[in-house]
Image (cartoon, rainbow, N blue to C red; front, side, top):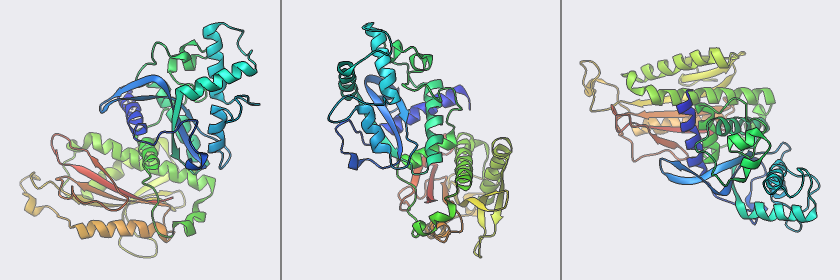
Length: 393
């Protein structure tokens, strides 16, 4: 991805974060999920997005042990009964050091109970946070690492002139604008990872009946990591398709599926060699072939995609008018959505998608429960919208 695209992705992260419920140090721990990632905001730090100014993300954090998110947050803000802590979380350590350097009150690393109380009060007054539930530990680590790298290397805005982090001795903090040091130089989040992250943030995952009964089939860390990589591969292909849609001139679902397969195969050869991409794959245990599938080295399903394509009624395909192009019905879209859920519910695939490419906006007023709709709307197809329904853990 080019620098401009990464900066745009950073802006999208901020726009997404602005839509999530906000918490502060007084929030009830019972309102927080046991596992996830939290993004922190600091008073006075803002960034301008296409939708207007929003709070700037100043820290990305997670946790290692299962079920420890509420405790991790509590430690960051200090105990509700005392500002003193045996082990200072990274934010408190960095914040304390920068505060000491700014005021030159004592050498870095020297504090005391009164100073710790002061740090606690300052953090409580200045910081708020939002939480994205993420159950899988490997996925939490992936998101935390790639988000930190994205926001540090491609900031959506520079920190304000009064931001305390400018006094930090850590160059990653002072220059990157984040209270993060670790992972600042890692590989930045790409479009596919962001789409998967957005799905987690917007609560659009899961929902298939019977998932709990089959979840154990895919709990192995190697399999889980492969599924995450394959899903990011597919969502990254959608990101690419959105930016290049006008170049293709699709006439049928087969054209669309073939284009996605070609892109997936090309990228996978460079970034994820342990998978293969097929079209018209026979469904496990019978049924209509699956339009697009990403499988591992043993031909086990990682991601399955069922595609529905509705061309624009106002365009031509060569010399053929729309009457000669394939048309769909909403019943077909609903049937594909049900099949997607059934594939996961029966344990046949770990993750499945229904993808509706509605080029002319014919179904703009209809949605499948739990689906996500995006208005792609390139100049050539101003009504183009894409709806996707995800089933899986």
